[in-house]
Image (cartoon, rainbow, N blue to C red):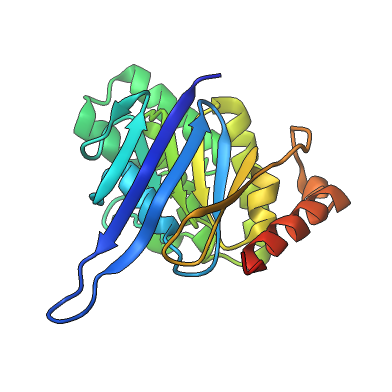
Length: 255
Protein backbone atom coordinates (compact mmCIF):
# COMPACT_ATOMS: atom_id res chain seq x y z
CA UNK A 1 0.00 0.00 0.00
CA UNK A 2 1.29 3.48 -0.86
CA UNK A 3 2.20 6.14 1.68
CA UNK A 4 -0.35 8.91 2.12
CA UNK A 5 1.71 11.14 4.43
CA UNK A 6 5.49 11.38 4.51
CA UNK A 7 7.60 13.73 6.62
CA UNK A 8 11.30 14.00 5.87
CA UNK A 9 13.73 15.49 8.40
CA UNK A 10 11.12 17.98 9.60
CA UNK A 11 12.38 20.69 11.95
CA UNK A 12 9.97 23.16 13.57
CA UNK A 13 11.28 26.05 15.65
CA UNK A 14 9.29 28.52 17.72
CA UNK A 15 11.05 31.86 17.65
CA UNK A 16 11.41 33.44 21.09
CA UNK A 17 10.00 36.88 21.82
CA UNK A 18 12.43 39.71 22.55
CA UNK A 19 15.56 38.09 24.03
CA UNK A 20 14.10 34.64 24.58
CA UNK A 21 15.89 31.69 23.05
CA UNK A 22 14.16 29.88 20.16
CA UNK A 23 12.50 26.58 21.09
CA UNK A 24 13.03 23.56 18.86
CA UNK A 25 9.72 21.68 18.94
CA UNK A 26 10.53 18.99 16.35
CA UNK A 27 14.03 17.98 15.36
CA UNK A 28 14.28 15.76 12.29
CA UNK A 29 10.91 13.99 12.24
CA UNK A 30 10.63 11.16 9.72
CA UNK A 31 7.21 9.51 9.40
CA UNK A 32 5.44 7.38 6.83
CA UNK A 33 1.68 6.87 7.10
CA UNK A 34 0.09 4.43 4.68
CA UNK A 35 -3.10 5.30 2.85
CA UNK A 36 -6.13 4.18 4.84
CA UNK A 37 -4.15 3.54 8.02
CA UNK A 38 -5.03 4.67 11.53
CA UNK A 39 -1.87 5.94 13.21
CA UNK A 40 -1.44 7.55 16.63
CA UNK A 41 1.34 9.72 18.03
CA UNK A 42 2.20 9.55 21.74
CA UNK A 43 5.00 11.01 23.82
CA UNK A 44 5.78 13.18 26.84
CA UNK A 45 3.70 16.29 27.40
CA UNK A 46 4.92 19.24 25.34
CA UNK A 47 7.10 17.11 23.05
CA UNK A 48 5.74 18.51 19.78
CA UNK A 49 2.98 16.04 18.85
CA UNK A 50 0.32 18.70 18.22
CA UNK A 51 2.89 20.97 16.59
CA UNK A 52 3.61 18.33 13.96
CA UNK A 53 -0.11 17.68 13.43
CA UNK A 54 -0.70 21.39 12.77
CA UNK A 55 2.22 21.43 10.34
CA UNK A 56 0.78 18.47 8.42
CA UNK A 57 -2.52 20.34 8.21
CA UNK A 58 -0.62 23.32 6.78
CA UNK A 59 -1.45 25.59 9.73
CA UNK A 60 2.18 25.93 10.86
CA UNK A 61 5.27 26.46 8.71
CA UNK A 62 8.27 24.17 9.04
CA UNK A 63 11.84 25.44 9.21
CA UNK A 64 13.57 22.51 7.55
CA UNK A 65 12.62 19.32 5.80
CA UNK A 66 9.51 18.42 3.85
CA UNK A 67 5.95 17.22 4.44
CA UNK A 68 4.31 15.43 1.52
CA UNK A 69 0.78 14.21 0.91
CA UNK A 70 0.45 11.86 -2.06
CA UNK A 71 4.11 12.58 -2.90
CA UNK A 72 3.43 16.32 -3.22
CA UNK A 73 4.93 18.85 -0.76
CA UNK A 74 2.25 20.73 1.13
CA UNK A 75 2.36 24.52 1.10
CA UNK A 76 -0.64 25.26 3.33
CA UNK A 77 -4.09 23.98 4.28
CA UNK A 78 -5.95 21.94 1.68
CA UNK A 79 -9.30 20.28 1.11
CA UNK A 80 -7.59 16.88 1.25
CA UNK A 81 -7.05 17.34 5.01
CA UNK A 82 -9.42 18.14 7.89
CA UNK A 83 -8.66 18.75 11.55
CA UNK A 84 -10.66 17.70 14.60
CA UNK A 85 -9.50 19.90 17.46
CA UNK A 86 -9.30 19.12 21.17
CA UNK A 87 -12.17 21.49 21.94
CA UNK A 88 -15.31 21.08 19.88
CA UNK A 89 -14.86 24.53 18.25
CA UNK A 90 -18.47 24.60 17.05
CA UNK A 91 -19.99 27.95 16.09
CA UNK A 92 -22.37 28.70 18.99
CA UNK A 93 -24.89 30.61 16.86
CA UNK A 94 -25.32 27.74 14.39
CA UNK A 95 -27.33 24.57 14.87
CA UNK A 96 -25.82 21.10 14.67
CA UNK A 97 -26.94 20.85 11.04
CA UNK A 98 -25.54 24.28 10.19
CA UNK A 99 -22.22 23.49 11.90
CA UNK A 100 -21.82 20.18 10.10
CA UNK A 101 -22.61 21.74 6.72
CA UNK A 102 -20.44 24.82 7.29
CA UNK A 103 -17.37 23.52 5.45
CA UNK A 104 -19.48 22.03 2.67
CA UNK A 105 -21.16 25.40 2.12
CA UNK A 106 -17.75 27.06 1.83
CA UNK A 107 -16.68 24.62 -0.89
CA UNK A 108 -19.92 23.82 -2.70
CA UNK A 109 -23.60 24.49 -2.92
CA UNK A 110 -25.43 22.13 -0.57
CA UNK A 111 -27.09 20.10 -3.32
CA UNK A 112 -29.23 16.97 -2.72
CA UNK A 113 -26.17 14.71 -2.94
CA UNK A 114 -24.36 16.64 -0.21
CA UNK A 115 -27.52 16.78 1.89
CA UNK A 116 -27.84 12.99 1.69
CA UNK A 117 -24.22 12.64 2.78
CA UNK A 118 -24.74 14.93 5.77
CA UNK A 119 -27.84 12.96 6.73
CA UNK A 120 -25.76 9.78 6.62
CA UNK A 121 -23.05 11.36 8.78
CA UNK A 122 -25.61 12.47 11.35
CA UNK A 123 -26.73 8.86 11.65
CA UNK A 124 -23.13 7.63 11.71
CA UNK A 125 -22.15 9.84 14.67
CA UNK A 126 -25.41 9.27 16.56
CA UNK A 127 -26.89 12.78 16.36
CA UNK A 128 -30.24 11.94 14.75
CA UNK A 129 -32.89 14.09 16.42
CA UNK A 130 -30.41 16.78 17.47
CA UNK A 131 -29.93 18.49 14.10
CA UNK A 132 -31.78 21.62 15.21
CA UNK A 133 -30.04 21.96 18.57
CA UNK A 134 -27.35 24.53 19.36
CA UNK A 135 -23.96 23.62 20.86
CA UNK A 136 -24.96 24.96 24.28
CA UNK A 137 -27.75 22.37 24.34
CA UNK A 138 -25.38 19.44 23.76
CA UNK A 139 -23.16 17.43 26.09
CA UNK A 140 -19.40 17.48 25.54
CA UNK A 141 -19.54 14.09 23.85
CA UNK A 142 -22.30 15.17 21.49
CA UNK A 143 -20.38 18.33 20.61
CA UNK A 144 -17.39 16.23 19.64
CA UNK A 145 -19.61 13.97 17.55
CA UNK A 146 -20.79 17.07 15.69
CA UNK A 147 -17.19 18.24 15.34
CA UNK A 148 -16.20 14.89 13.84
CA UNK A 149 -19.15 14.94 11.44
CA UNK A 150 -18.24 18.47 10.32
CA UNK A 151 -14.71 17.33 9.46
CA UNK A 152 -15.97 14.26 7.58
CA UNK A 153 -18.61 16.27 5.70
CA UNK A 154 -16.00 17.87 3.44
CA UNK A 155 -14.84 14.35 2.49
CA UNK A 156 -11.12 14.76 3.21
CA UNK A 157 -8.63 12.05 2.35
CA UNK A 158 -6.90 12.60 5.70
CA UNK A 159 -8.43 13.21 9.12
CA UNK A 160 -6.10 14.79 11.70
CA UNK A 161 -7.32 14.46 15.29
CA UNK A 162 -5.76 16.44 18.16
CA UNK A 163 -6.82 14.78 21.43
CA UNK A 164 -10.49 15.04 20.45
CA UNK A 165 -11.76 13.09 23.49
CA UNK A 166 -9.60 14.71 26.17
CA UNK A 167 -12.36 16.91 27.59
CA UNK A 168 -15.10 14.28 28.04
CA UNK A 169 -15.71 11.89 30.94
CA UNK A 170 -14.18 8.42 30.95
CA UNK A 171 -17.36 6.54 30.04
CA UNK A 172 -18.18 8.85 27.13
CA UNK A 173 -14.58 8.70 26.00
CA UNK A 174 -14.67 4.92 25.69
CA UNK A 175 -17.92 5.08 23.73
CA UNK A 176 -16.43 7.65 21.36
CA UNK A 177 -13.32 5.53 20.88
CA UNK A 178 -15.42 2.55 19.82
CA UNK A 179 -17.52 4.77 17.54
CA UNK A 180 -14.38 6.19 15.93
CA UNK A 181 -13.12 2.69 15.11
CA UNK A 182 -16.49 1.98 13.49
CA UNK A 183 -16.32 5.22 11.49
CA UNK A 184 -12.81 4.30 10.33
CA UNK A 185 -14.04 0.83 9.30
CA UNK A 186 -16.79 2.42 7.20
CA UNK A 187 -14.82 5.27 5.63
CA UNK A 188 -11.23 3.95 5.55
CA UNK A 189 -9.92 7.49 5.79
CA UNK A 190 -6.27 7.95 6.63
CA UNK A 191 -6.36 9.05 10.28
CA UNK A 192 -3.53 10.57 12.32
CA UNK A 193 -4.42 10.84 16.00
CA UNK A 194 -2.54 12.67 18.78
CA UNK A 195 -3.18 11.59 22.37
CA UNK A 196 -1.63 11.35 25.84
CA UNK A 197 -3.70 8.22 26.52
CA UNK A 198 -1.57 5.21 25.60
CA UNK A 199 -4.45 2.72 25.87
CA UNK A 200 -6.50 4.91 23.54
CA UNK A 201 -3.66 5.00 21.01
CA UNK A 202 -3.18 1.22 21.11
CA UNK A 203 -6.90 0.46 20.86
CA UNK A 204 -7.50 2.75 17.89
CA UNK A 205 -4.37 2.27 15.83
CA UNK A 206 -2.56 0.15 13.30
CA UNK A 207 0.70 1.79 14.37
CA UNK A 208 1.79 3.99 17.27
CA UNK A 209 4.63 6.47 16.77
CA UNK A 210 6.44 7.12 20.05
CA UNK A 211 8.05 10.57 20.30
CA UNK A 212 10.92 11.53 22.56
CA UNK A 213 10.84 14.54 24.86
CA UNK A 214 11.26 17.93 23.17
CA UNK A 215 12.81 18.49 20.75
CA UNK A 216 10.74 15.65 19.35
CA UNK A 217 12.25 12.79 17.43
CA UNK A 218 10.68 9.45 16.57
CA UNK A 219 11.87 7.11 19.31
CA UNK A 220 10.04 4.00 18.10
CA UNK A 221 7.27 2.71 15.85
CA UNK A 222 5.03 0.05 17.39
CA UNK A 223 2.89 -2.03 15.05
CA UNK A 224 -0.40 -3.00 16.71
CA UNK A 225 -1.31 -6.52 15.63
CA UNK A 226 -4.77 -6.77 17.21
CA UNK A 227 -7.56 -8.03 14.92
CA UNK A 228 -10.30 -5.71 13.73
CA UNK A 229 -13.10 -4.91 14.20
CA UNK A 230 -12.36 -3.90 17.79
CA UNK A 231 -14.86 -3.52 20.61
CA UNK A 232 -14.98 -2.31 24.19
CA UNK A 233 -13.98 -5.82 25.23
CA UNK A 234 -10.88 -5.43 23.05
CA UNK A 235 -10.00 -2.20 24.87
CA UNK A 236 -9.83 -4.04 28.20
CA UNK A 237 -8.12 -7.16 26.86
CA UNK A 238 -4.69 -8.41 27.89
CA UNK A 239 -3.46 -7.84 24.31
CA UNK A 240 -4.08 -4.09 24.58
CA UNK A 241 -2.53 -3.96 28.05
CA UNK A 242 0.61 -5.72 26.81
CA UNK A 243 1.04 -3.10 24.08
CA UNK A 244 0.36 -0.32 26.61
CA UNK A 245 3.22 -1.57 28.77
CA UNK A 246 5.51 -1.74 25.74
CA UNK A 247 4.71 1.84 24.66
CA UNK A 248 4.91 3.15 28.22
CA UNK A 249 8.38 1.64 28.66
CA UNK A 250 9.52 3.26 25.41
CA UNK A 251 8.29 6.68 26.56
CA UNK A 252 9.95 6.32 29.97
CA UNK A 253 13.20 4.90 28.61
CA UNK A 254 16.15 7.31 29.03
CA UNK A 255 17.54 6.38 25.59
